[in-house]
Amino acid sequence: MEQNRTNKTLKWCFKIKNGLKAVEPNERLSKSYLEEAKSSLARAEKDFQEGDLLWASVVIYYSDYYALYSFLQRIGLKCENHACSISAVKYLLGEEKTKIINEHKDKRIDAQYYMKIGKEEEIEEMLKEAKEFVSMFDGIVSDINDEEVQAYRDAMIPNDKATANEQSNAKANNED
Image (tube, rainbow, N blue to C red; front, side, top):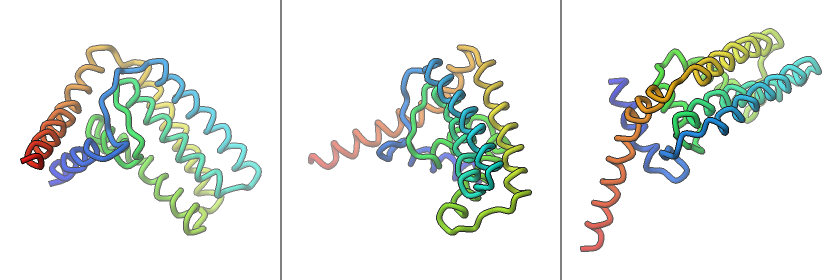
C-alpha cells in the first residue's frame, strides 16, 4: 500500500510544473549544494548560539534539504518542489534516509507559520541530527559511482517517460 502511494506521488511529481525532471547528472552543482548545506549548518549553529531558535529551526531544515538535493543533482534529477524531492529520495534510498528531514520540515513549518518554536534542547537535538544527516548525504554523494548513478536514473526515469507518454496521449485526445 505504501509503495503504491509513493508511486502515485512520484507520478504526480513528474507531471507538475517545477516538479521532478530528468536532467544531466551534475557533479559540480551537487558539490555546491553540499557546501551550501554545510554553510547553512554553520548559520543555524550561530542562530542557535544567539538564541534565535525560530531561524535556527528554519535553517536546520534547509541544511537538510540542500544535502538531500545534492544527491538528486548528482544523479540528474531536478525538482523545485520540496515534497517531491523528499519523495524521490525516499523511493530511491528508503524511508529511513528521509525520516529526519521530514521531522525537521514539520518543525520548521510549526516555527515559521504557527510560531510553535521548539525548546532550546529540541533545537540542539535538531542541530545534532542535521549534522549527521548532512554527513550521511556527503558520504552518499562522495561515494557514488557512474553505475550507481545510472541505476538510480533507471529507477526514476521510467516514471518520467510514462508521464510524457500520458501527456502526449492526452494532448492527442484533446485535438480530436
